[in-house]
Amino acid sequence: MKKILYIALTICMPYLCIAQVTMGDVLIKNGTLLTITKGILAETDILVEKGKIKRIGKNISAPSASYKVIDAKGMFVMPGIIDAHSHIGLDVVNEATSPVTSEVNVGDGIDPFDINVYQALAGGVTVSHAMHGSANAIGGQCQTIKHRYGTYNPSDFIMEGAPRTIKFALGENPIRVHGEGSGIVPRTRMGVEQIFRTAFTEASIYKQKWEDYNTGKAKDIPEYSTRMEVLRDILDGKIIIHCHSYRADEILMLMNVLKDFNIKKICFQHVNEGFKVAPELAAFGATASVFADWWAYKMEVYYSTAYNAAILTRNGVITSINSDSGELIRHLYHEAAKTQRYGNLTDEEALKLITINPAIQLGIDGRVGSLEVGKDGDIAIFDKHPLSIYAIPQFTIVDGTVKFDRKNDKIDMRIIANPDDKVTSSFIEYHSHDDRCMEGVADFLFKVHSHK
Image 1: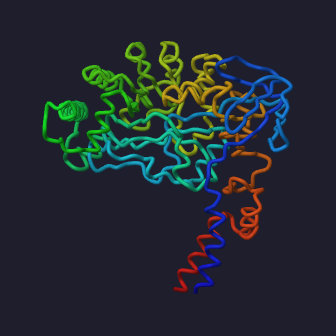
Image 2: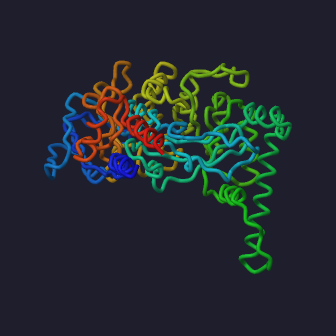
Image 3: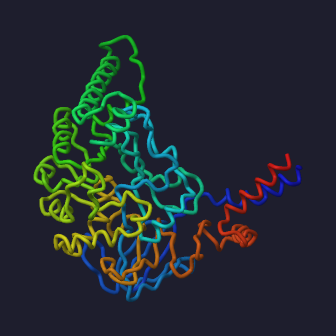
């Protein structure tokens, strides 16, 4: 029995040892750079060193032979695509036990083996906003993740330093889950509003109690509440609200609630009727993350238009195109292109919808969303202009490490981050008969367990 366990550990240890974030070195030569913020640079090189963009220019040489060199002649190089609304890489989505669950965090339930992350990389997506679901009026905290597929430590997916975000929801979803499902508030749209007002009022009282205690005005220590701590941080502007929304009347309602509590940071998600209240959104300073052309799949989202993104953009609202789908996330560059058919956005405006704009909405635009020296080496390389219907991603790079290589990745998928490593390559060879390396491990451990 000990011998069997030893063999099992021998096989599994290489798998565990490679669970780490790699900050890579790569030189991309002769590509057409779509910088997003600095125009188009023809036949230009970009050097990434230790995961950061070090230089952009012509005739750059690799500092050493250890740098991976990609010849992008005839190809288009752009910043990695960012999805501001996704649920990939999550083990759980909804904590549907209360109308307010701000204490939970989806970052505690990341699934590093989710194949959707690799498939997103195949669509040029390097960062996504892993969100709590829309069952609650005030849901759980969300997590901005880097698509570091191939590392098996869930915390490695968390984008270091990304601002905190939280999910809110309007309309039918919280009404259905709580009012209709459990017979509690909210059962109506007016009930949803009161959930917000009650929660923020309680958080304001909680905040004042702690301020009184910390300044010596009160002697008794207030009761600590994780839920209230998060709500207090929303009041203090430390957390960005991302709110599931469809109808214009409810969008206006929530902005009025936020004004009453002096809360300014919000991105409305879906916001299908945003075109009706675009000037009001712009005046508030709210941003909008929308579908390109999804609507009419239920009554509250019956009315929308494919011109939504363009109208919001023309009214000065920072707008992004999102997927909310493990499948559509691979086609966000196509979704952005639809705004040129419906709204005549320029190439730059359309590409901003999937790069710098979602980065702004997530508070990470200082690190990603454009090709600039000093930013993270998150890059997507296409064989044709990414807004072309014929464009196909060829390489996707995260932190200077190639995570997707169309020509050289295995046909099924690539689980191991570094297939050239001697230890891990022997592990792959051992399980070459399996469709997935992990299946070999699972099968072996099952056999070991059955011998106990």
